[in-house]
Length: 152
Image (cartoon, rainbow, N blue to C red):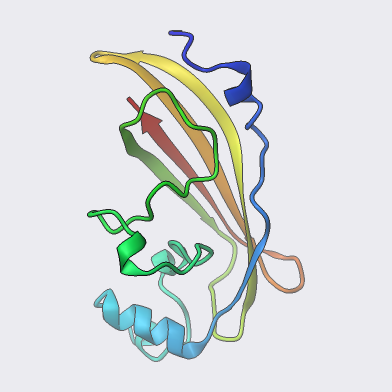
C-alpha cells in the first residue's frame, strides 16, 4: 500500500448521492435506439430500452460547453478529490432484474462502496468502486450497476 488515501478519503465509503427520479417515455427510448443504431424492433418501437440506456440517465442535463473534449461532464464526480488525477474505467458489471419500459418511473442512487490502493508497474493506483441502484415506483429493483474507476 502506498498511503495516498487518507481517513478523509475513506470516510466517503458508504456516501450516497441524493436520489434522482426520472420518468421514461417511449420517445426517450426510440431516440436512444436511433442514436445508438439499435437494430432490434423492440428498441426501435420503444417497447423496451437497450441495456446502456441507463448510462447517465440520472445525470444532470448540461450544455455542451460544460463538457470535456471526451463528452463527459467536467469535475462533477461525487466523491473526494484524489491525489492521483488520471482516471480510467476499471470495469462495469450489470445485474438486470427486469427491462426498462415506457412509463417507468425510476429512482437512481449512487453509492461509493469501496476505495483502496494498489501498486502498479508504473506507480500507485487508487481504485474507487461505486454502485448505482435503480428501483421502480413500487421500490422494486430494476438493476444494479457496479462500476470501478482507477486513478493513477
